[in-house]
Amino acid sequence: MNLYTKEQVANIKSQNFAYLIVEEADNVLTLTLNRERKKNALHPQLVNELAYALHYAHFTPSIWMIVIQAKGNVFCAGADLKAMAGIIEENDSSVPQPSGEVLMGELFNKVYKPTIAKVTGDVYAGGFFFLAGCNIVVAQDNVKFGLPEVKRGIYPFQVMAALLKVMPARKVIDWCIRGYNLSVQDAERYGLVTEVRTADNMDAAVASIIAELKENSPSAIRYGLEGYDNIQPSAAEHKYLYDMLQKTISTKDGVEGLRAFREKRKPNWSGE
Image (spheres, rainbow, N blue to C red):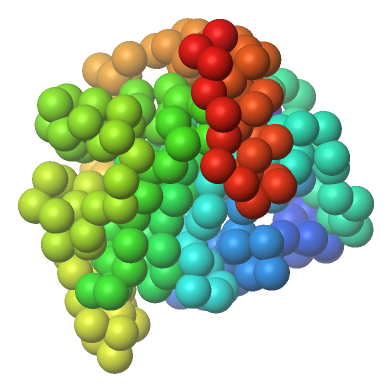
C-alpha cells in the first residue's frame, strides 16, 4: 500500500468524504458507497476515497476486517462515463489526492485484511472490481450482474483480469464479448459469489461471517492473504490493461459508443 502513508490516513476521522460513508466498530471497518443518485458510479474522487480508507485499514492493527456495501438499488454501475469523457463533478471531499494512479484491479490486493462485499443492488461493469477483489461476497437473491461495455464501444479489460482470478476463463470471455446479464445464482455457480441470501437474511449472513472470522487469528489471516497476493499476477498487468482501455476509448467505435449512450440511442459501429 503505497498511495497514502500511515501518517496521512491516521486522521481519517477528521476527513470529509463526499461519496463514501466510513464507520468503525468492533474491529470492523464498514465502507458504504454513497453516490446513490449516480448509481454509485466510480467517480475519480470516490476511487481516491476508497483507496484512502483501505490504506487506513491496512495500517491499523485494530481493524481486522472490512465490509463494503452500497446505498440504493444499484451497488455500483461501473465507471462514471461522464468523468471518462472529462466531465468531472465537483465535490466537497477533503481526502487528499493519492501519490500515484489508483488501479481498481489492484486496490484490494494489498490490504491483507478479510474483505466482505454485501451486495444488495445490481452490479455492472467496473462494479465487479469489488466482487472480484473482496474475499467473501454475500449477494441478495434478486440482484442482476451485467457487463455491457462492448455495447458502448469499449471493453472491460481490467475487469476481465480481475474476474479471471475467481471465475472460469471460458465463462469470463463469453460474458465480456456478449455483454449479457448474469443471474446471481449463476454468479454463485461460477465462483463470483460466495453466498446468496434473501433480503431479510442479508444482515444475519454478514454478521455470521464476521463472528466466524473473529474466532480466527487476525495475524494468521493477514499473513495468509499477503502470501496469496504474492503469487498473483503483478500490477504491471493492470497498468497494461488500463492503457488498452484508453486506446479502445479513443477509437471511432469508442467515441461513438459513449456518445450514443449519452444520447440514449443505438450506436452506429464502423469497426474503426
